[in-house]
Amino acid sequence: MIEGILVEGLVYGIMALGLFISFRILDFPDLTVEGSFPAGAAAAGAIVAGLAGALAPRAPAAGGFGAAGGLGAAAAVPAGLAAAAPVLALIGGFAAGALAGLVTSLIHHRLKVPPILAGIITMTGFYSINLRILGGRPNMPLIRNNPLLGFARTWLGSGVLQDISLFIAALLAALLVAGLMDLFFHTEIGIAMGAMGDNEASVVQAGINPVSLRSLGIALANGIVGLSGALAASYQGFADVNFGAGIVASGLASVMLGELLIKSQFIGVQIFRVLAGSILFKGLMYVARSWGYLAGITPNDLRLLTALLIIGSISVSKYAGKKPKALSRPGEKRR
Amino acid sequence: MINIEALEVSFHQGGGEDRKVLNGIDLRVPKGQTVSIIGSNGAGKSTLLNAIAGTVPISSGSIVLDGRDCGKDPEWRRAAYLGRVRQNPLAGTAGEMTILDNLALAARKGPRGLRIAVNKSKAKVLAEQVSQLDMGLENRLRENVSRLSGGQRQALTLLMAVLSHPSVLLLDEHTAALDPGNAEIVGRLTRRFIAEYGLTALIVTHDMKQALEQADRVVMMHEGRILADVSGGLKERMGVADLVELFRQSRGKDYAEDRDLLG
Image 1 (cartoon, rainbow over the protein chains, first blue to last red):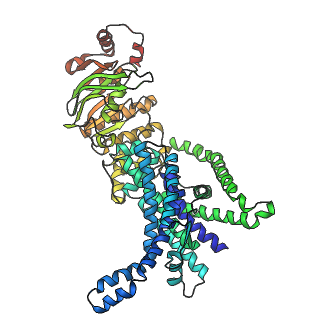
Image 2 (spheres, rainbow over the protein chains, first blue to last red):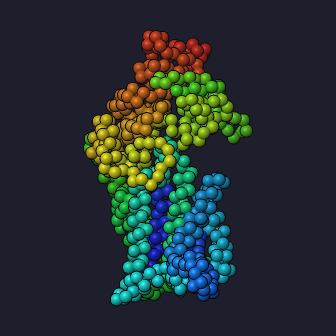
């Protein structure tokens, strides 16, 4: 239960990190996420299944060649590929998400379509693309070569309870993504991206092409969302074409809960508080699911609760947010 | 160096007919010269700067900056030659980023890579730069720019505009939104930076006195054209009253809106 909340919070928190980039850093309200999240899951499932399916029958033959001595290297490649399947699945998840982001970015920049509509177009199209990736079925099991569970069992499994090893695996994944993001937003290009959503003119004035920079940002955001989708499929044990439904709202709720929880102007803290917000969000949802019946709340009401949570977060930050602004005024006269 | 020939800019209007905002501008500004641009509201002063910077597209004519014909280049590409400060102190900086990050962004032109933006030595260099403003900002490098006053923010914007050593500086009434004290400080910094960095500068202003004092040359615009162009000894001998009289004569009519010009 508690470890379920933590693991889910971390896995879906990576998705919220992607959302943080598009909504907060780039100021680009991006609904592509509803398509890029399942795209990441589907790509991960397909890669694992494809590598297992395509390589398994060939393995003995390849071994035969290897024994013959002539094509030893050729035999090693498939074997290496099979071992690398979990890693390739995660990379594939990232790539699939990034591709969806690029599509949205192209629709927005080339056709001058507003961000929200561009995202809706991509997400609608990707529903069918995701079904194709899944081989025409709405879902696909992801049991063997499972990146998250496999890592938890093989590297951490011995001597530790499975629940704890799973939590550590998810924590490592989330911290790695968050840490790399923190590093990225301290680089030259990361700082330019930070300025992008704040004041595009300052980026243009620095001689940077704002269209390429925004495209890169949207691709990166959706790549991270795709990676989260791949990890979610891994955690659930299957990839599902409907994984993305309602994901933007839950991601936003996580971002906003984090902002309510921890106030900071530092990008590092802003990144890590998204993970905290996501865990809190999953906790609240768990409470509503488990004990909500006491207040007459059924699982059908969870989406409504998510929406109310977002409205509540915005309201609170709107009224509480006034205070820091007012406090900052005396600072102007400090000189 | 700036070389503008037969420049025209039209804005689309609802009725189908285009309105010519710039109507055949010819302007040559040699390297290192400071030019004040004056004129009543709607004369096309700001549009001229926007056309040079690439913020508005040109209809015809040519713009050559530093020997490069860049009238068709996108705004971000032209920014490589240009520093720019607008009237609104919020326009040139990213308010939700620190002073240090803003300076790091402005310190050079062109695409960025994955190098860490601000290390210790870079921070030291930028702190020295910002201390030139004499506003104590070097002690507030980690504060967000939104916490600065309008005057401080405009001074920072000015520094950011010259930090990458552009060849041309475009200033569009950049002291008009400030109180007199801050306007004076930013005006003084402007003259200093133009001299120090050897910049070619175009300064749009409503303040005739300032226009005469701060520049080597005064260009007067009206209805999208250049009406008068005064420099050298003639400019040195002119006072504000002479400038108004010149404007009146060049235009041939006596408008009540001369008061706009006097600002």
